[in-house]
Length: 428
Image 1: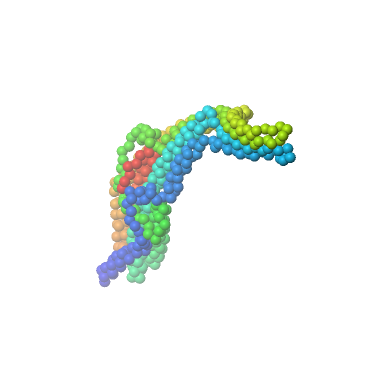
Image 2: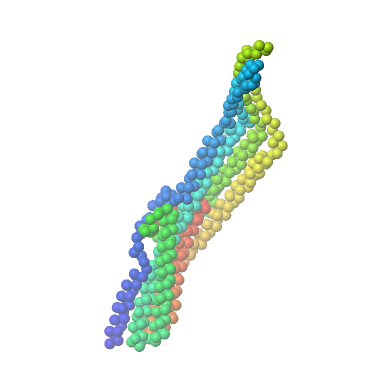
């Protein structure tokens, strides 16, 4: 009779474990996507990145603005002495005037605008450098969340099966009511954790849709891959050199230095006095007055005007350009130091993450799993307590979760190393 009860309990436990897999909603519409396809979609469709691209067009438009010459002025006039009885006559006048920029102002404006266009290109490249790294981390996070959901799903299946088994064993008088209730409470508690893991996974998938600017959230992108291709051997000095040679933000800082120089040149040019050039043509009509008759005339006038550059007394524009150039020089040196610091920190974090991953290669996961299986086996035969089983279950869950967190940290550390060094060879 006892053998029949054991067989019945075992079958019920197995059935419960199979049925519980439907607790997590994993049947929603998903579209599998590999990493390189995902990254290509980010580069093509991300709206923030698309908006950043317009900065280059805006800078190019500013170059066209800088090429503009001062507009000439065309004036017309009419003169009537309003002396009809004396027949004093009337006249017309016209003039054309313009400003002749001196000191190379136009060339200085164009050089500054072109330098700012180059800066926009570097800033866009730096934006994509960070976008690519952030998108990769989001992809890895969704992979991690999928593994964590699998852990919670499996753990809940085992605990729920144990709770059902304990319910039958209580009815048979094999265990106390408190033990049966305890296993049921722990199964429900684990179910709530399963629901949270499911929500975390789906949320990370929604984030992938945001990065690719997908509007159809009825079908979510589902990453394909694992954490097996993140082993690298780096040299710290080489990484620092690479970062200082390749990082777009350092190139942008260098370009800012050039902009500071161009601003200073423009400020100097703006202090040079411009010349005004004018050409005028007048027509004076025939005067019919019998006392001073005068024939019609067409005088032509030419001249230049020299503004009194009293504003040169104030050197605010020149000082602003000068101190901006000094500031950009200091920021460039700070960016160099920041890159060195970023690369060094990322490098040591990567080495630490590698050691953490290696610590799991000594059979820690298998040991925790064997302990749990042994505790469950002993508990079903009345050789150990439920608390021992629950403790072993929690330990096994913690070890698995820590393992997948460590794998994610290892992959993320590689992403940060390559982000900091301005290199990229990640594919998985």
